[in-house]
Length: 77
Image 1 (cartoon, rainbow, N blue to C red):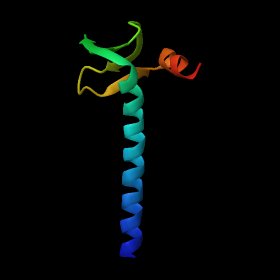
Image 2 (cartoon, rainbow, N blue to C red; image 1 turned 90 degrees about the vertical axis):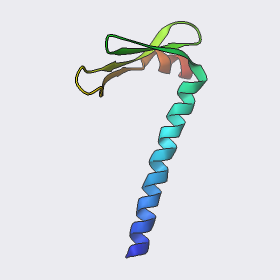
Image 3 (cartoon, rainbow, N blue to C red; image 1 turned 135 degrees about the vertical axis):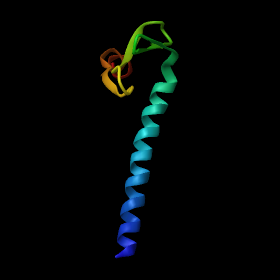
Image 4 (tube, rainbow, N blue to C red; image 1 turned 45 degrees about the vertical axis):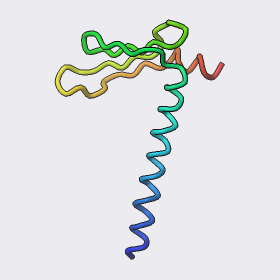
Protein backbone atom coordinates (compact mmCIF):
# COMPACT_ATOMS: atom_id res chain seq x y z
CA UNK A 1 0.00 0.00 0.00
CA UNK A 2 2.83 2.38 0.81
CA UNK A 3 4.44 1.75 -2.59
CA UNK A 4 1.21 2.67 -4.34
CA UNK A 5 0.90 6.03 -2.55
CA UNK A 6 4.60 6.72 -3.02
CA UNK A 7 4.30 6.18 -6.78
CA UNK A 8 1.02 8.12 -6.96
CA UNK A 9 2.47 11.15 -5.17
CA UNK A 10 5.65 11.38 -7.22
CA UNK A 11 3.90 10.77 -10.52
CA UNK A 12 1.58 13.73 -10.02
CA UNK A 13 4.32 15.92 -8.55
CA UNK A 14 6.57 15.51 -11.57
CA UNK A 15 3.66 15.69 -14.00
CA UNK A 16 2.53 19.11 -12.73
CA UNK A 17 6.12 20.32 -12.48
CA UNK A 18 6.60 19.36 -16.14
CA UNK A 19 3.49 21.31 -17.20
CA UNK A 20 4.61 24.35 -15.19
CA UNK A 21 8.11 24.35 -16.64
CA UNK A 22 6.84 23.93 -20.22
CA UNK A 23 4.64 27.02 -19.91
CA UNK A 24 7.48 29.06 -18.48
CA UNK A 25 9.82 28.02 -21.28
CA UNK A 26 7.30 29.14 -23.91
CA UNK A 27 6.88 32.54 -22.26
CA UNK A 28 10.59 33.09 -21.65
CA UNK A 29 11.32 32.77 -25.37
CA UNK A 30 9.27 35.81 -26.29
CA UNK A 31 8.87 38.06 -23.24
CA UNK A 32 10.78 41.32 -23.51
CA UNK A 33 9.72 43.24 -20.41
CA UNK A 34 7.07 43.18 -17.71
CA UNK A 35 5.44 46.33 -16.35
CA UNK A 36 2.81 46.39 -13.60
CA UNK A 37 0.52 49.44 -13.54
CA UNK A 38 -2.71 49.73 -11.52
CA UNK A 39 -3.01 46.03 -10.69
CA UNK A 40 -2.57 45.04 -14.34
CA UNK A 41 0.65 43.33 -15.32
CA UNK A 42 1.47 44.07 -18.95
CA UNK A 43 3.88 41.69 -20.61
CA UNK A 44 5.49 43.10 -23.75
CA UNK A 45 6.83 40.68 -26.30
CA UNK A 46 9.91 41.13 -28.45
CA UNK A 47 7.97 42.84 -31.23
CA UNK A 48 6.90 45.58 -28.81
CA UNK A 49 3.19 44.83 -28.85
CA UNK A 50 1.27 44.12 -25.67
CA UNK A 51 -0.06 40.66 -26.41
CA UNK A 52 -0.38 39.02 -23.00
CA UNK A 53 -1.72 40.54 -19.82
CA UNK A 54 -2.44 39.34 -16.32
CA UNK A 55 -5.11 41.24 -14.41
CA UNK A 56 -4.85 41.08 -10.62
CA UNK A 57 -7.59 41.72 -8.13
CA UNK A 58 -7.10 44.37 -5.47
CA UNK A 59 -7.16 42.20 -2.37
CA UNK A 60 -4.71 39.31 -2.50
CA UNK A 61 -2.99 39.56 -5.91
CA UNK A 62 -4.66 36.46 -7.29
CA UNK A 63 -4.74 36.32 -11.06
CA UNK A 64 -8.27 37.20 -12.15
CA UNK A 65 -7.99 37.27 -15.92
CA UNK A 66 -5.40 36.11 -18.43
CA UNK A 67 -5.52 37.37 -21.99
CA UNK A 68 -3.54 35.14 -24.32
CA UNK A 69 -5.36 35.35 -27.64
CA UNK A 70 -2.81 37.28 -29.65
CA UNK A 71 0.05 35.35 -28.08
CA UNK A 72 -1.44 32.04 -29.17
CA UNK A 73 -2.02 33.38 -32.67
CA UNK A 74 1.60 34.47 -32.79
CA UNK A 75 2.86 31.00 -31.86
CA UNK A 76 0.53 28.75 -33.80
CA UNK A 77 0.00 30.55 -37.12
